[in-house]
Image (cartoon, rainbow, N blue to C red):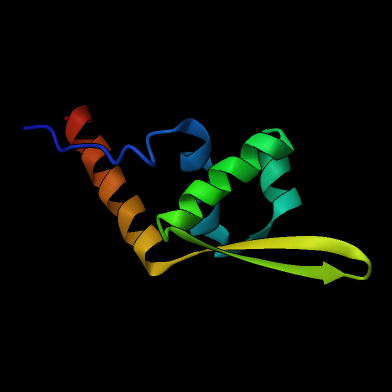
Amino acid sequence: MFKPLDPLLHSELRLAVVSLLVSVKEAEFGFLKEKTGATAGNLSVQLQKLSEANYIAIEKSFRGNYPLTTCRITKKGIEAFEKYVEAIKSYLK
């Protein structure tokens, strides 16, 4: 039987963000924007959705006079990603 897919992670951009954060643990907004090829506005919206689900934590600070947004994956986010990967595997068998 096929396992259900997490609808939050089934979005291409949100899955890309979580995949990146699983491998680096923490990343700045600019890095995520560059790696995903997303627009700043779309990335911001998707990060907010992941944050509301407690899959990622967002920290806002400043580097000099410039705003800096840093994202890190949470334990819940890691668990959700691992479940998603297992569910996808069930479709490939």
